[in-house]
Length: 437
Image (tube, rainbow, N blue to C red; front, side, top):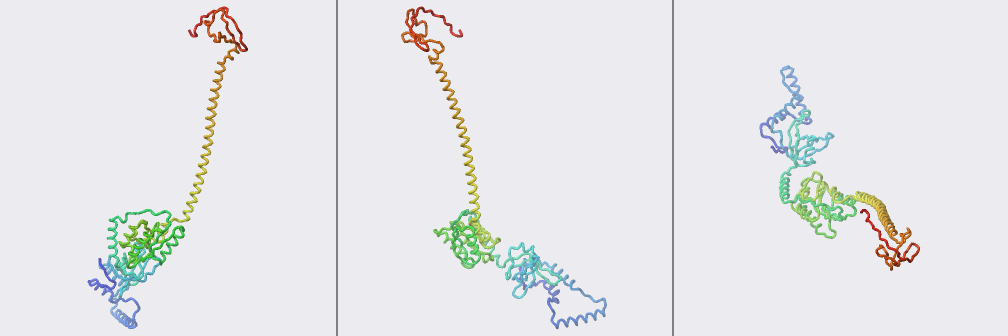
């Protein structure tokens, strides 16, 4: 790969060829003396052509530009080159393309950045940004202008920072600092914020927290968020919120607004990463924009794309909470009514079943009583006497067999409506055959 400054020259034969081809080309109006010389030269050329006729040789402007293009296209030294310079004239076009100027202290070159290329860049071009531009040198034949067709852009001097960043990421990941992810409290009463006390980021976070969940108190630890000592200052802010017991933060937001990688570098420092990991309170980071990732984001319990999103993630929306409560209340009421109705129905069914069971038991007991009453009535001597039977007793003992009687024995005969005394005249014993015998 070749790294060139805008004003760097090629010392190869390529330089000689390009110098020869472009030595007589000038962009811009001619000075009066040059115009006069050119006019005289043209007059002489016409006179020469009139004399020589068709023998004169010439090329058109289009052919000249085409030859220069072929010359540049055919040289490998003009392809996939890296050029160092600063961006200017970053005027956007409706097509989405950019045609910025890349310059250094003494020279400049036109660049072409197609919309498709811009969408793939990891760096957003900014006015005055010092960059390494990768691309191919080419010629815009219509204007006779050579320009750099950009394929990639890197911020100059960032390479070492990225190498340092990747090394620290690997180290902390191996130690397990990226693995811990604690849940956030659903309804925090105190939210701590570690950020600068000036700027839009802190105002946005306070506004969103107050709007979404007014019951939550906000504790601000004002710190530096960029420059020398910023990482140490942010780490101390986190430690201070952890030490504070009344009020004690339920969750901490660490963040700042967008900026360049240098502006955000404090959030890539090891001291801050370890302070976040050491925090007893869950930490949510909201650093820069959605495309910005820092070491702090990997260590934090939750990473938000922006400070505003961090504020949205740490507290619930009061309107959503109230809606949920309302829905829950309605559901509880509906369920309570359903349970009461089910209970009433169950009671009705149980009462009916109880009544039927009791009535069945009473009916069974009544039938048994009736049976016993009939049995008692059948055993009642008076009932027997009513049917014409009599009870004979001798000396108070019921005579159940003639074997107990003898002639001239005195006996009592009891009938249904009285008693009578009698004397046995004769005893005759019958031969009784057992039934079924």
